[in-house]
Structure formats: C-alpha cells, structure tokens
Length: 381
Ligand code: GMT
Image (cartoon, rainbow, N blue to C red; front, side):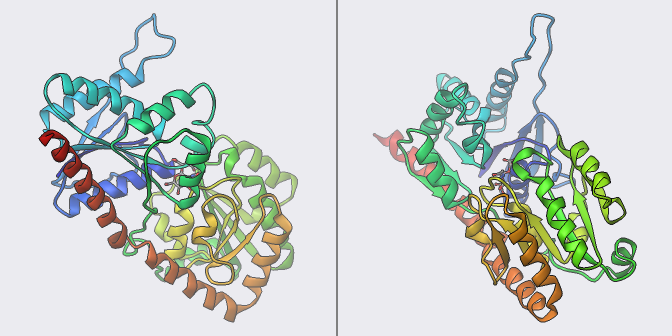
C-alpha cells in the first residue's frame, strides 16, 4: 500500500507512535510518506520505503497566525496526487483530521477518492479537543473519517462521552518494539549514574502539567528518605524550571539528574529499577510500556487508560491521582523487597509482550484493507 502518515514530529507520544508505525509498515514492504512540518524525532535512519515531505508554512506580514492548516492540506493534496497514495492515516485529531477532510474534498474534485483514518491519542480528546473553540471541528472531522481508532478503551469511551460520534471507534493499543526495548547490562553507565549501588528511578515525559512532574519529585523524596536512590528525568518542557526550583528547595539536587531529550532511551531504561508516571490523565502511557519491555516495573496513577496496562502486583502498582503517599509507599515496598522486585520485573516484561509490535501492526493493516474494501464497494454502487 502507499500510505501517507500525518503527525506531530516532536517528542509527544502521538508523533513517536506514528513514526514507529510508519517504520514498521515500511519494513513490511509498504511505501510510507510522512507529511510533517519537521523531520519526526524517531525518523532517524534511511529506509528505502520511507519518504518525507516537509510542510512549508510561508509567512506574510498580514498573518499574525500563519495558516498551517491550509499549508498542510495543500501538501497532502500534492503527495496524494504525485505519490499516488492509497490512503492517509492522521494522528492526533487537531488539526490533522480536518485538514485531511479538506484534502480529501480537493482531490475528489480531480476524480481521486482517498480515504483517511484518524487515530485519537489523548489530549486531542480529553483536553484540547473538548474546548468549545475546537469541539465542533473535531466532532465533524472525526465523523467524516473513514475509520477512527483510539489507543485505549478508556480513550474510546471518553470520546463517545465528550463528542456526538456517529461511527465505530476501534481500539488499537500502542505497541512496543521489544527488540529495541529489551534490558541490557550496561554496568559502566549504571555506575556513572548510581556509583554506590543506589536504586535508579526514572520519569520520561514532555514536562507538561498533565504529567504531574512535581508528584514525581514528591514520590522520589519519600523513596530517598527510605534508601539511597537516584532519579533520572528524561525530556523537557514547560514545567522544567519549576521542577528544578523544587529540587533545590528540597535539597535533592545531588540525587536528581535532568538528562534532557534522549535518543538512546532504551539505554536509560536498561539501567533503571522503577518507572514513575503519576499523570492527571494518560490515554495509554507509551513510555510506561517501553519501560515494561525493558523489565522496569511501573508506579503510576490509575488515570485514563493506565489500568489497562499497569496491573497492580504484576507489572507495578497504582495510586489515585495526587496520592503521592500511596505511590511512594508502593515504590519503597517494591524496591526494598528484591524477590518481589524480580517477580514484578518479569511480570512487566510479560505484559509488554501483549503489546508486541508484531501483534499490533497487523491490526492497522487489516483496518487499512477494510477501509479500501469499503471504498471499492462504494464505487460499485
Ligand atoms: O500528552 C502527551 O504526553 C503527548 C501525547 C500526544 O498525543 O502526543 O501522548 C498521548 O499519546 C500517546 C501515544 O498514543 C499515549 O501513549 C499517551 O498516553 C498520550 N498522552 C496523554 O494522554 C496525556
């Protein structure tokens, strides 16, 4: 198939997932065309079946807000026509679903029928999409999609609750490349981070409010009081200055390391003992899944889709949003009991295999086939 993928190219989970999907589809022989305003972060190696089309957004003195949507739709039209795309798969509803709808209408005038699939990822529904500024366009463009997927049952249910959706939403979970995310012994790296055998806690995010990074610090403080430990914070974002301040005020600077945006995430996960994700909302929690595949148990909140992947006592533990004492208590209990830690590490790894890339990619391929078949049937009428 010739597939166009539209996503945010940044460190957000939706862009990461879309890029990994495109790479996996290319490995299976499909021609994949990424249409984004920047090279996606995980699109970092040459692949004969992958093409990248950059969306240029020209500025003009009249434009206080350069019209990104128009530029994106026009690029989509260009790629659909010139690369003979069979379908478009857009990730994150805003504004990708409405721009795909526009592109579809434009190419239809030229006699080309190109279906589009919208994958809902999380804040496009639960936070931004619900806002009345965007809701009518989001509702319309989801309903106009030829197929809709959500990354968890929770997100599917939230979408039905928040919008007037007239179509079926299929749940296709996030997936993990278990070859890349598999635990390796990296003694030198581990020693550099934890020279005296300290336990290593890890948090990975884009440091947005929804991630509750201050709760990560509060949990770590309690762990640190109970045992020697280090905390690695991977990523960057708006809350980082607040967090740095908090580390100084709590006197934790020597034990907390900000490592920024890391490409070698699998190495960082390989030297970690516990992953912390206390989010306000998480449709799925891709970073937690990558940690599990690396045999790192997860201490998380029980928000959104997290209970669909983090099974208490099996893959880690959960607490209510904001209940740092419970999450800290579980973290300390787990880290102090080596036998339990070993058991939960195995449980986390086994759970990750459920979301193995080889189990999930065929679900997307089957959906594409179905959408194309529906289109063929419609053309026969
Ligand atoms: O909010 C983020 O952290 C980024 C966001 C995105 O859409 O870029 O991530 C969402 O999509 C991921 C991939 O499907 C999910 O694993 C994350 O749970 C989800 N984030 C939230 O729901 C907050």
